[in-house]
Image (cartoon, rainbow, N blue to C red):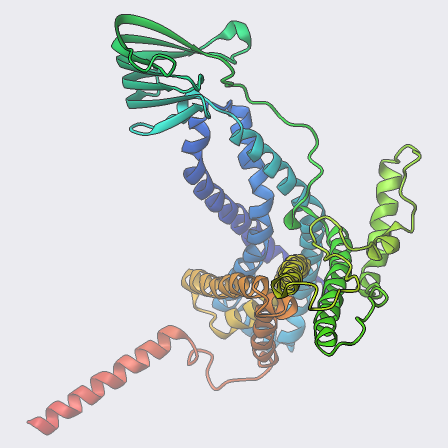
Length: 520
C-alpha cells in the first residue's frame, strides 16, 4: 500500500506543478496587461515595474494553489480510470476509499503550507505593495498629462492643457497654460507647440517648457483698466517644484486588514469588541436617561466597562510559538519601552479608542430636558448610533479576514474530497472533464466567497457562514461522492458521459423512426 501511495502522489505532482504555474502565469499576464500601460506611462524604471508585479504574485498564488490541487486531482484520477488502472486495483481487492487517503493527506499538508503562506508571507507583500503603490501615485511625470484635459501641474498654481502630446519626444501641440500663482494677477499663455524637459541640474524638480508661436494674456487686478496681449515666437517657462523622481517613503506603520497576520487581527478584533460593547452600553444608558429625564427621575450612571473577550485564547499557543520563533531568529534589543511578553492578553483589554475603532464619549449625568434642547439629545443618540455602526463594520472586516485565512487553505482538502470521486465517477472524461469541472467548481466557490464577504461587510451575514458556507456545502457534496466510491455499478461504461449521450441519441432515433412508421 505504501508503494501505491507513492505512485498516486507522483501522478499528482506533475499536473499540480503544471497547473500552478499555468494558472499563476495566466492571472499574472492578465494583471500585467491591465496595469502595464499605466506604470510605463509614469516614467518608472523597469526595476520598479518588475517589483510591482513581483509583489502581486503572492496574492495570485494564494488563490491558484487550491485551484491547482483540484486540477491535479481531476487529471490524475481520470487518467487512472481511463487506463483501467482503477479497475485492476479493485480486482486486486484495493478499497477505493483507502486509495484516495494518501492524496487527502497530501491535500491537508498543502492546506497547512497555504495557511502559513497566507498568514506570514502574504500580509507582508501586501503591505509592501500598498506602500509602493502610494509612492508611485506621488510621482508626477510629464507622461501623466492627458490630452484635451486641464492637468494640474502644480495644484492651485499652474494648469496645462495640450491638444496633442507625443510621449516619445515630449512634444506638445495647441498648448494653453493657466498661471494662477499670483492671486492679484492672471496670466494665460497660448502656444502653437512646445517641448517639455526636466531640469537635470536641480535634481529633476523643475519643469522647463519651450513654447513656439503664441501669445500671452496678462491681466492685473491692481490696474483693472489695463489688459496686455504679448506675442512671441519662442518663450521659456520654468515651473519650480514639479518633481519627476520616484522616492520611496520610510517605514509605514499603518496596516490594513489584509496586511495583518491572524494574531494581529485577533488583537485588533478583540479591542474592537471592547469598543463596540462600550458604545452599545453608552447608547443604552443614553436612551434610558432620556426616558428617566422625561419622568423626572435621576439620570443613571455609567456602568463598569464590558469584560475583555476570550476569543484570543484559541490561537494564543500559535501566536506564542510565532513570537518565540521570531525572538530566536531575530532577537530585538532591549529598550525601555519594550512590550512585555504577556502583552497579547493585555492588549485585549485596551480601553476604547484603539486605532481603527471609534469609541463614544462617556455618558455623563444629563441635565433635565427643560434645560437642554431636544435636538441635542437626539444628536447624542445619533452620534452613538453612527459610532456603533462604524465599529461593527470595522469589526466585521477583521472577522471576515480571520476566517478567510483558514477557509481558503481548507479548499485544498475540500477539492481533493470532491475532485477524486468526481474523476473516478467519469473515468473517460479526459481533459474536458478537468477543464469543465475545475472551472465550474472554482467559479461557484469564488462567487460564494465574494458574495459572502460582501454580505458580511454589510452586517447581513455572520463572518463564519460567509467564509465557511461554500466550504461546508462542497464538503457535503464531496463526502456524499466519497462514500459512494466503494459501491459497485452494473456497468463501468454506463455512467460515462459519452455512453450516455450515445444511448440518448439512439433512443431519440428509435422514437423518430417509430413516429415515421406510424405516420406511413
